[in-house]
Amino acid sequence: MDSVALDGIINRLLEVKGRPGKQVQLSESEIRQLCVQSKEIFLQQPNLLELEAPIKICGDIHGQYSDLLRLFEYGGLPPKSNYLFLGDYVDRGKQSLETICLLLAYKIKYPENFFLLRGNHECASVNRIYGFYDECKRRFNVRIWKVFTDCFNCLPVAALIDEKILCMHGGLSPDLHDLDQIRNLQRPTDVPETGLLCDLLWSDPSKDVREWGMNDRGVSYTFGPDKVAEFLQKQDLDLICRAHQVVEDGYEFFADRQLVTIFSAPNYCGEFDNAGAMMSVDETLMCSFQILKPAEKKPKFGFGSTTTTKPGTPQAKTKSFEDHVAVSGDVKSETGHKISTQEKKLLEGCNSSYLIV
Image (cartoon, rainbow, N blue to C red; front, side, top):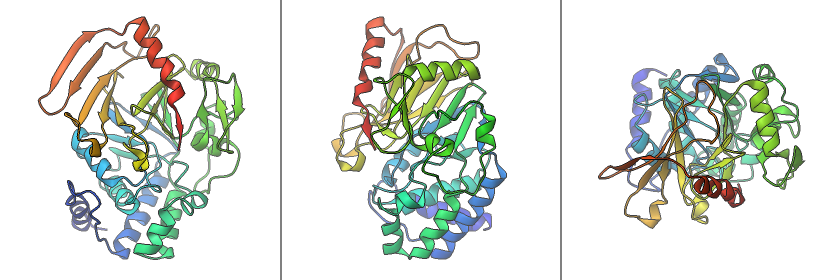
């Protein structure tokens, strides 16, 4: 696909901004080219991406295309900002095709600035059931769904930012002892029912367990705060960044801020009154959170931004930050407010609001 054709696809996909639910008509040939060309790029790049800050990190999108466009509106269209998406682009929402096509198009146009990880829904056995297969069949045919399946089987599964922040869709695995294990996972591959790849896409943190526990999803495990601390210490990391669960404010800390969950689909499925969030990591590894409120609520301000840090003594490369709030529109900010011990406890106490996707 030449650059003119690619730009034409991107422009058509962006034209519906501000018109929620408006479909974009791409041809079957165009979609096939997006899948084939992006698949080649995925396989040329490692399974454990090694990225540099600054970068913006987004969690689950789940076919909520108008909200994806709102994220880009706030964060800046590529290549103004570098992006890492943590998976779950399809299923549940009504516009999985527009969502995944725009993401693949940006991957092709900016392969060194725009990165996509695999989520548990980028798997044929899952998206056959939860909406993507039906959308492909209704708007095109089953063949195009199979083309997407071949593409999804080549997605990378984790990213390491400046050797300090490890990102994946799900979480830790009892089989994960060294990051080279992620690098050595073979692609293309389907997602197995057990093992390292399965856990990276399916596992969940739980404050109610020590070490490893049963997962209510019926797949993979849950892991406790002790396993997070142990893994970070052994691998000389500062933070695990993952998605995979609806959280009320769009982001939520766990294990003394050693792990953060990011979920970027506000008002998920039209049923949850959750916000979405995007995490920005600057050159000093300071992390801030941009909040995407549900569009239907029409709040006074559509976006908010909160910067937070994990407590404790920061490691060498990670700054300890102060809280500040900036709200889009007439941009207002409050700086210099340090998090009190009580506020830290309140944040940590919010972990009970995890909702299963």
